[in-house]
Length: 135
Length: 102
Length: 130
Image 1 (spheres, rainbow over the protein chains, first blue to last red):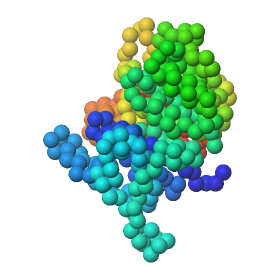
Image 2: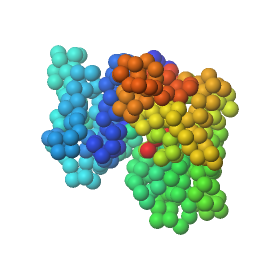
Image 3: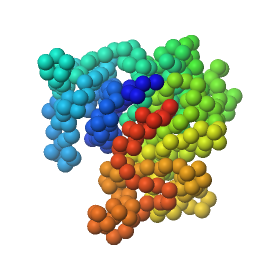
Image 4: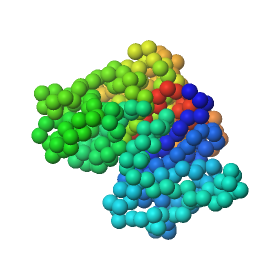
């Protein structure tokens, strides 16, 4: 086995109702320093973590959603959002933040980090992962 | 690869089992633990879905959790195998990776 | 095989810590190596030595401590999650100006890197949570 493992962070819960989304993000940020092959999956209520225009003033919690837009700076390029989960919730990609990374192999071109994938495609991605951290 | 999935939620409370079954590829296995064990019993509203998935995915249930909830092995859907904690460990070694559906 | 275990829920409210304990014990008895048990989210609450459950119930914290002593287990509590929830060792208590620590024997407080390292080093990382 090579030294680099495929890490997949599976996010299935909405933000703020529980702490899982925030603390998952903290693992992702620390994990980024380990030079592994990292991907994030957002499915079921996890897709709500990526909505734009989150405003937490009224609940007096820290709005951690801007952190997602920093993931590109941590060289996290693979953010999978499940198509079926979006559709079931009446959401489209336009309801989500626009997340990007700069591709150093392509003259630092700005590219989209989010890929909308079907459940079937996500199943294959999960299957090919070595370490799956579920939140 | 072939994955071991664990599900620890009742299908009557959360969509965890549905989501797991939606992503479990043929040749993988689903182990029902904690409150998830109720999906292994006969006569429930989810029995049909479970049986359908059993066509290409192996189902296991954690015996101690089943017993704790007063559910006898005679109540299980035919074809679901009971394992203890040793069996749980063995399943994780037998399959290539493991995903906990929480 | 080499296992990493992640425990994401506290004791008593959720069965996760119990299941993780039984799994860990069974894996050790089968001759497997437990590289590390990592406690995250409310899982850090498994590490306070101030729990006093009723006499006729299991003592989840003591059970982990005893298993750690018997098998020389590495029980790691995430520092960021622990700080939020008031789990302190002597150094942390001093550093944060608190009047006492509460960490149980066999547990140590460290960073999230310990979890990632377990993912890299272990053949299997098994997550127990809610």
